Length: 146
Image (cartoon, rainbow, N blue to C red; front, side):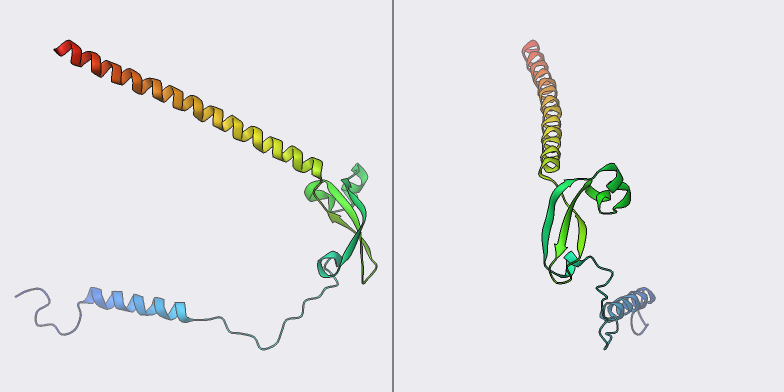
């Protein structure tokens, strides 16, 4: 009698497979409940330059040692600019990236790219020499066997 003959329905393994498939489909269809009320975002703790127009009062400049310790905006880039928000008339500091810093980062990147290119060019030359030697040895063996 062949396996599964006389049984009605699917074998046990197939039941488990279908159960897992159905469970997965239910999980995929489940959606997070949507709240009817809107969440209000408090803008009082956000910097004014995120929520309103601003004018740059002082251009981007490196932070002094004192300002670096007292102003948290200096921490990320080491440069800061003073801005004045239009609506609230608040003066705040905003972290910025200077052109000089960007130029240094660009040349560091270019140097790294050239260095990696030189390393791989050397590897290609070494590998090509190895392959040339192997091909020359094969040719020599063929000539000697004649």
